[in-house]
Image 1 (cartoon, one colour):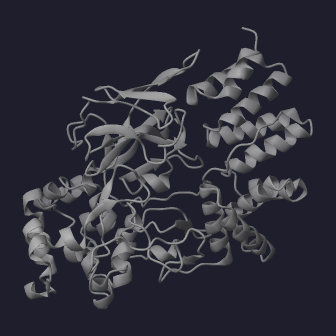
Image 2 (cartoon, one colour):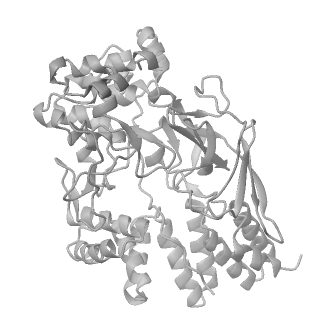
Length: 531
């Protein structure tokens, strides 16, 4: 029996400018600024584990923890390897993985990446600074199996690293090393330095840009919204400073109410503040933050108070004597408190909505309509994709019902690209409407040979029609793009067994179990193959 697999994030090309020269070239003339910047969290937001310049040093005193259901335990060793062991089982499943790279500065947390033959996957273990302990990575908390195959795609990695060496056409394969600059490099905010180093031009100064261009630099990583959709024909790329983020993608939010506090949406929270609204576009992230330096913990309260007093007067504060006694002159303690985020457990972040009266804000209704963030525009195709992504991500029936007619409309009016058509095909297939799904998958694969989900689906259709050779070819193509589709590997093994290729079938299943040792389908089929 052919089994289905979840539609994962579809492939979009990622582009980086070839004129980047790296931080070392900047340090030749700006050594003091570069030295200061390299100590900031942004500059330390990625790197190779265990290196001297890795910043935060994790502790390994209490490294063992279990998933919330108690099915598996995890233990992290000082050599950055973690063990996972199934609990209360007659045949325990166990394994060891090496942590190759880290993302996150460690100011709040640091998670780690598994390198499997150049393909990067997020590990299920994360180090949280506040508790100085290892726990489940964000999004892994409720799982009862060792999820070792969450792909790290370039669009996610680019907010933590620079000069990413993504391999074209694959979902999550990279060169060695996967990125040439740890963290956010100088040129991510100031633009490529090739011409400047050669004496032919100036670097971009974000503070001197018009507000839309200035704010785009920060928004590229600090404005997540509910979902971001890359525009048709555009690449999922690192922003070139001076250009507009809205030219490449649309950020969608829920209509009608303020958003929750989320890790990567400080821009959205700041835009809700009375300070921002009253500034007439003058206030921005750089008003309060110097990106080249971070104040020492003992200096933070005074540093940020001075920023508040650039607009406000001391007599504007109406705090009670008790509050003043508790917080002193720390403006942010009252008006920008640190609180739990809605998207990541074990993490607290500063609330940038700068509430006059501290307290939790209203959360957006999960069923509210998706709308473009102010100054962003959306086509029918963009809105259709936004609903489709959220519907499949959150298993949201209401958003699915909104996405389906919009995807059909986009296909009918000719604005749907391969990505939109792939989602439409998936919706048809889920509705058992193969008459519509199959030709759409064929069209997607003809348009874009990076759409691995289409290749996987076409393999299933070929197998159902008895075309085993075609099924094998499609599934091999799909796995070359995204090797972690376990059920596709199981299907491929079944097809290989059908044509008598026992050795390759065994290899496909062994690789499936290497990627997911808990896969019951791979284990069951492998047990049926004679040794």
